[in-house]
Image 1: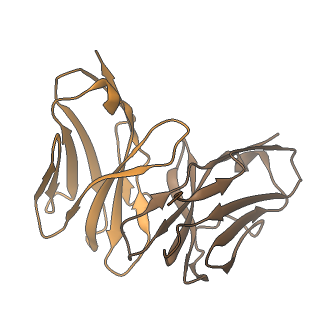
Image 2 (image 1 turned 45 degrees about the vertical axis):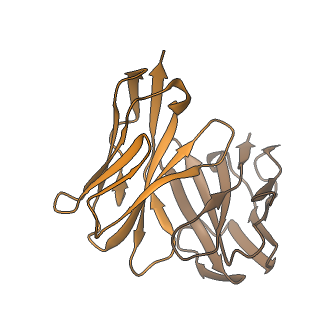
Length: 113
Length: 112
């Protein structure tokens, strides 16, 4: 298995632009998670899905953030409009079982200038 | 408010010595704890875990200890190797939840 695949690896965008991050989970994994890593807050959970349905989005910082999972093999995290404080590394993870066995992707490093 | 706390941002150890990474938590409902390791430009990878019904779990050079009364866990690496240099994240799972809650991480540097 190729693991969790995230794209792009790096994204540099100007403030106010729309940014879309993509994730392909491992086949057969029913749970998908989006995390954000910053120096100040570490790894914080943004949202997670179970069987393509969003379960908990309480970690999404603002309405500028939205996430979708149209099918079992694809998810997106969108920021519109982007702001410099959104600069961080965004990770996608998937798991087969509840609460453990996470496999993380390599992350997308987002820089908003 | 952080439910999982790693109060030491960094730790430096000499090769061959013991590395001890600490983690405190506030939620008594957490029932499962994990440590993840992260190298630069890579995602975190699972290292070792422990259930709340145990107080110790060992896997090779890695041992995790859990003190429920103190709401504290620690990761021991013996002996430490330069390849262990990475960021280590402590994580916990709520009994009622599915998602893992992570600490801020501790950067371990092992010098040869």
